[in-house]
Amino acid sequence: MSSSADFRICPDTGFKIHLPADKLIKWNAVTAVVFLLIGGLFGIGVAMTRWPAVHLLPADMFYMALTAHGFDVLLVWCIFFEIAILYFASSILLGCRLATPKLAWLGYWLMLIGAVITNIAVLRGDSSVMFTSYVPMMAAPDFYLGIILFAVGALVGCFVFFGTLVIAKREKTYEGSVPLVTFGATVAAIIAVFTIATGAVILIPTMLWSMGAIAHIDTVMYKVVWWAMGHSSQQINVAAHIAVWYALAAILFGAKPLSEKVSRTAFLLYILFLQLASAHHLLVEPGLSSEYKVFNTSYALYLAVLGSMIHGLTVPGAVEAAQRKKGYTKGMFEWLRKAPWGNPAFSGFALSIVLFGFLGGISGVMMGTEQLNIIIHNTIYVPGHFHATVVTGTTLAFMALAYWLVPVLWQKELVLPGLAKWQPYLFGIGMGLAATFMMGAGTLGVPRRHWDINFADAAIGYDFSGAAHLMMGLNGVAALMGGIGGAIFILNMVGTILWGKPKTKAAEAEPAPVAPVGGAATVSSYGNAGTLAVPGTFTLAMVFLVAFILYFFVNWKYLAGVWPIS
Image (cartoon, rainbow, N blue to C red):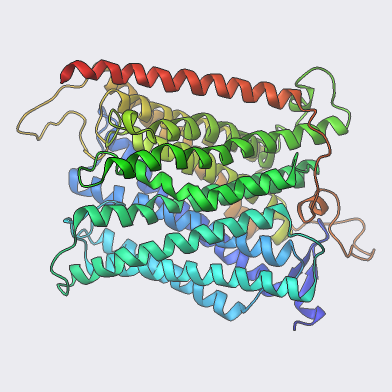
């Protein structure tokens, strides 16, 4: 049992914060931001090389940068921040002590050491196998060792989270069901356990193969099991950033979901079906049966899509219901016009929902259709989709949360509040355009992994259309715009932590609140909005549905265009 001396009361929110959890959240979040910087710099190098007019890096350095970029941003940045979210959603939201802080620190150091080991292996130049690391390409043993250590550390963090839930239940620090945000974090942690287990199943023998202890790794088997980790790592991100959406809706507006039970059911669908989306990377593999492909890309996948569409309706619906309750009832969209668009926590949150849905969600369903997948498989459309999900969805949501969380935990004012107002727009629109241009270039056939669109070093040349070159050039410009936005975010976070002005309160002499106040009270409680009168949200949902249908059938038209080849 912890004593009262192990806790502090947050003067902004009234949260009862366990000091060891507070420290762990800070260290995991800061480390995440550092790796976002590292991975982002590698990403700029990749984008500048794929820009035909610039073509920055030679082939060997390009593949090294591409490998490091994928590892540092998809795995390291996201999962470090997600561990911070897990500790926040358990210890702080439930007002209880963190289970086994020493074990949590072990997990942190395993993750950090593993990330450093793999980065060193990549930068050494002998492990440029890209993020997928497909066999028979072979990396150095320490490349795989670093990923394994990182995964084990993340697994330890998940178990600490589960242990904290047990402590909160046993010590009765909350009443009734856990808050929806904690429920969403639990779903993310469950998916993480599956993801890490499959990663161990394939990466441990692959490391032994690279050491010469195993003679052969079957390539199809490798891909099937690896993508259960590689794609499911994004499913951790989806569950986590949707939990962040609900948290920000509650914190900023005091919003409650339209229906707690429906939202929780949507999260449950993720556990049961979301990992099946991994199959869209395997739809052209001749070694897999048609039955496997059809089941994964139709009946089962639709249930995961249903979960996402529920969240896409209920999150903005919750905001609309809260705004209308405050009196913003003129017309269909006054609630949206009167939202705090100058607050980066809100603008990042809003852009994350829109860009993730329209760019990541629609393209993901298209890619997950067996017939349509063939026209974009292994083109640059695929990383375009990744950037729409991981960057404009997950990363933007995490940035939005950080704008609220960092000043609250460190009790400091943002150092660059003026730039912070513009940062989500620069980053979100820049990376959204980058994703769009990559998907456009992929539709025109630009390959996913080749360093030179001009194929200058190929024995048989191939000339892409001027439109493809234009798309890749615009992608470079958009990536620079997003990179500036990312740099502003990192500067703001690091600057706030190091040099931010301490917050002062006129009421410091008054006793601190003993329970969360305002929007913070909503995020840590159970309840429904009590209304479905959200006409603006339903109208926007119909716009999304029309866009989805049009794009889906446009791609069937593209597919029809390749049939005469046979």
